[in-house]
Amino acid sequence: MTFRRLLFAPLLLAGFSVPLHAQCSDAGVCSIGGGHEPEGMVALSADYSFGSSGSPDDLRFHSVQVSASITIPSIARMSVSLPFNSQSGPLGSVSGIGDLTVVFSRSLLAFGPGELDLQIGGKVALAEVNAGGLPQAYQSGLGSNDLLAGLHFRLSGFNAAVAWQAPFGRSENAITRLKRGDDLLLRAGYSHTVDSWTAGGEVLLIKRLQESTVLDTTAAPGTFRSVPGSDQAQINIVGRASWAISANVELTAMIAVPLLKRDVNIDGLTRALTLSTGLSLSL
Image (cartoon, rainbow, N blue to C red; front, top):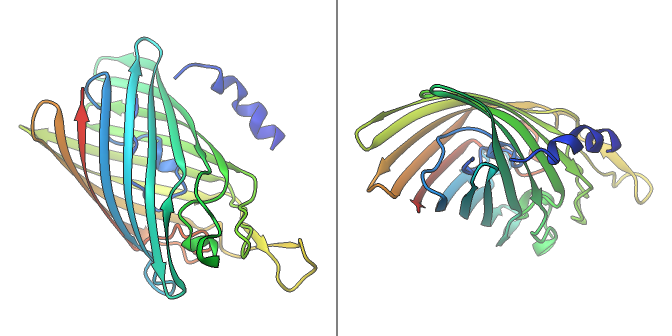
C-alpha cells in the first residue's frame, strides 16, 4: 500500500482528454486509453451494455451508464462516469447504482498527427455490496476505492495504451469479503473514418497481477485465503463503430468477445460476450 501511494504521488500532482468507454470485463482499467477524443469543450453520453459470463456461472449483466467530460484549457480533460447496473443468475438478481469513475488526461507530447497522454483517475465505491444477501459477483459495485493510471498514445488511426489499476481495501460483502489483486492493461487498436462513419477494432490484454483473497469459511473467523487461478489473464477482441448523425451528435456500438477467458469469476468480471450501444453529444 505505502509503496503504491509513494509511486503515484508525483503523478497525482502533475496535472491532467479522454472519454470513458464501455466495460471490457475489467474492474475499470479499460477507462484508460482507447477510442478518439470527444469534440468540443463539453461532451455528454449515455450507453447501454449487455454482458454474459457464460457457463458455469450463467450470470447476465445489464448496465446504463451516463458520462460527462469537460476540457480545462491548457490543463486537462476530466471525464466522469456513473452506471446503473443489474446482475442476475441462478442465485437471484441485484440492481443498483454502480461505482463512480473519474479520469483526468493531460497531453505529455504532441507531434504532427501523434500524441502521448498521461491519464490518472480512480473508482469510488458507491454501490451497495450486500444487496439480496448474494455473493460479490452479483453486486453492482466492487466495494473498493481504486487508483487508475496509464499512458495513451495516438497516431492517425492507431492507438495504444498501458494502464494499471490498484484497489485499496477489501469489499464489505459478507459472503466473500473480496480483495482483488492489481490489474495490468495492454491495448492496441486501429480505426478508420469514411464520411460520417468510423469503424475499428482493438485487442486488449487484462492481467490480474496477484491472486484475489476471500473469507476462508473452513478456518477461524476473520481468516482469508487466496483464490487459485484468480490471477489469470483475459484477452479480448473488441469491435467498434460510430455514426456522426450531426456535427455534435454521435451514435456508437461495440461488441467484445474473449480470445482467452478467465475461468474464475469470484469478482463477477468474467465475460463471454459484451454488447454496447450509446449516444454522445459534444458542445
